[in-house]
Image (cartoon, rainbow, N blue to C red; front, side, top):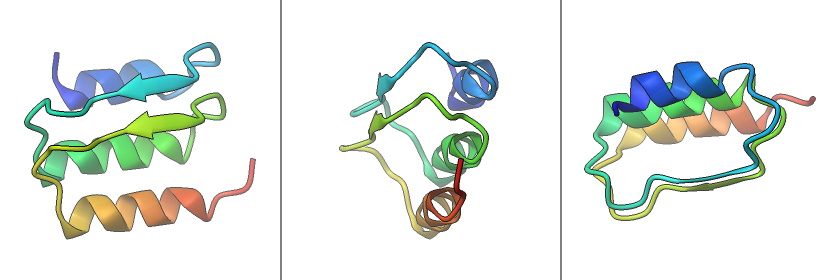
Length: 70
């Protein structure tokens, strides 16, 4: 399953509270999809993304998501 599909599935999901995508080989674009999803998802409280190939785009998307108040 791609990160884009996961991000779409979680966009308005209200039941998943934890997601571990560690070691899934995610690149910067995949991480960006997940970061954008976090701006809209109000249920997810724990996201583990260790051991991936994320970079500055992902970091910017995650930082942007963290500035949104729900």
